[in-house]
Image (cartoon, rainbow, N blue to C red):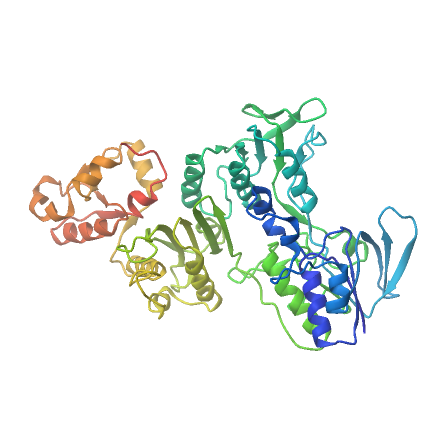
Length: 556
C-alpha cells in the first residue's frame, strides 16, 4: 500500500508512525514544505523565553533523538521529503504533484491513500506597514528564531502584540521574562475570548500586575517606520514599538483540498467524517486543516490544537489500515500558563451557552487548591456553567496560581459523559491534604450549582452588584468578613458585620431592603444569607465568588 502524507508537523508524523506499526510493508512518504519536522509548535513561546534552551529540544523524542528525515527513514521506515511543496492532487489518477522548493521541476507521487495534514496559516490583517522589518507572527521555528535574534542584548525593548488570544498571551510572558515592555492591543472588549468576561478580567489584572499594558476595545490601523517598525498606530493613539507580533489567530490551510474539489465545511476547514475521511474515500485529513464537532453543542467548529492533531492522525491511520476507529469531537479544552497563573477552560462559556439559548445556572467556587492548612495551598478560581433544564454540566473555567489542570480534566470527563452536577458532586476523587481539600474544588463548585438549582442559594454576580451600586439602588451590601480582613481590603459602600456577630446585630439591618451578602469567597456570605432568611429577611442574595471574584477596583 502506498500512502502519501502532506504535512510533517503533528498529525502527519503521527499518522505515518501508526501506519508503519500496523502495516510494516506500507510505503509511506511525508511531504513537508519546511525543513523542520515533527516539532512542538506549542513550545515556541518557551523557546523564545529561554526556558527551552535549544531548538532541537522541540524536535526530539523523549530520549533526546532528533526527529529528522534520517530518524524517520531508519527508525520508522518512512520516506520524508522536506522543503518540498505539494502543488496539485490528481484524484482521478490518485497522484500528487510535488516540487522541491526553489526548483522548477516537479514529480508525481502515486498513492493508494492520501492524508492531508496541511495545518493552518497565521492570519495577517492587510494593515499598512505589515511588511516592515521586525513585524512577526509566531507560527513556526523560523518566526521563533527571528524573535530570539531580535531580543539579543541587554537593552529593554518596546514590543506590541496584536491580539489578546492564546498565542498573544503566551508570548507575552516569554517577552516579559526577556525584559521587554509589552503592550497587548485587543480590538474586543476583553482578552482571552475563550473565557467569560469575569474570569478574563481576573487574568488581565494579573498580567497588568506583572507590568503588561493591555488595551482592549482598541484597533490597530497601521505599523509605521522607515524600513523597520517604530510605531503602531491605533484608533486611540500611537504606541512605540521596536517589534510587533501579530497574534490574531490562524486559518486552516485548505488551498490544496479546495483545488482538488474536496468538500470544505462551513468553518472554512476541510469537512471530514468521524473516521477523518474527506468527501473522497481515498483521502483523509487531520489536524489544524479540518473542522471538528463540538461535543456539547453538536456544531462544527475549527479548533486547532496540537493534542487534537495527534489524536486525529492516529484515527486516520487506523482506518487507512482497516482498523475501525472514530474521533468523536472536541470540547475546546485549553490550558495555558500566564506568569504564575494557570488559565483553563472546557465546554461552553456562559456567553456561548446563552447565545445557543441554553437556560443556564453558573457556579463560582474560589478557594485553595489543597487543604488550606498546607503551606503549598494556592488560590484557584473556578466557574461552572450548568444547564438548568437537565442539570448537566455545560462548561468549566479556571484561573489562578492553584492547580487548574486536574479540575478541568475532571470536567472534561463529566462533559464527555453528559454528567449532571449531582453526579459530579459525588465523584470519588483522590484526597490527601497535599493534593486537594477534603471536598475538592470541582466538587464544591458542583455543590454550589446544586444549591442554586434547588433554590437554597440565590445569588447575584459581581457585574450585577456593580451596576446596582452605579445606579444607586437602595440595598444593603453586607460584608461578613472579620474586621482585620475589612481593614486590609474592602468593596465600595459595603457595611461590615462579621458573621459571628450577625445574629446579635440583626436589628441593625432593615428587613424591607434587599440584602447582598459576601465575604472573601462567599462561603460565609452563604451562611449569612441563611441566618438572615431564618430571621425573616425576604430578599437576600449572595454575591457570587465574593471578593475573590470581584474584577473591579477595590478600596484599600
